Amino acid sequence: MSDKNTATTSDDLERVERTVYNSTGVSRNLFNTDGNLALEKSILNDEGTIRDLYLQLRFFYDMIT
Image 1 (cartoon, one colour):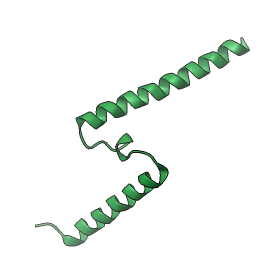
Image 2 (cartoon, rainbow, N blue to C red):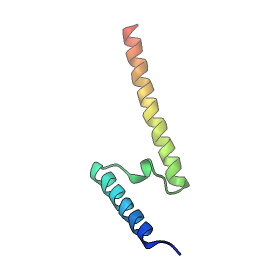
Image 3 (cartoon, helix red, strand yellow):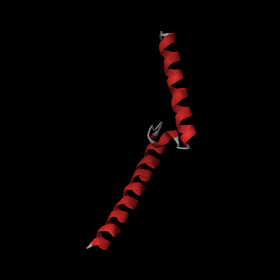
Image 4 (spheres, one colour):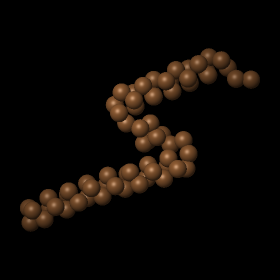
């Protein structure tokens, strides 16, 4: 027994969310995981991004000292 208005609103919101992610060319599962495999890949992606940032900052610091 669900409210049809709530389901429609949720569907509309999900459609808008998919459209935003698709228009930017970013995977929807990057921030909103649907399962454990997507979560694992998201964590690996975050770690890789932070590692690259760390290496850039380290290089910059080495250059100025």
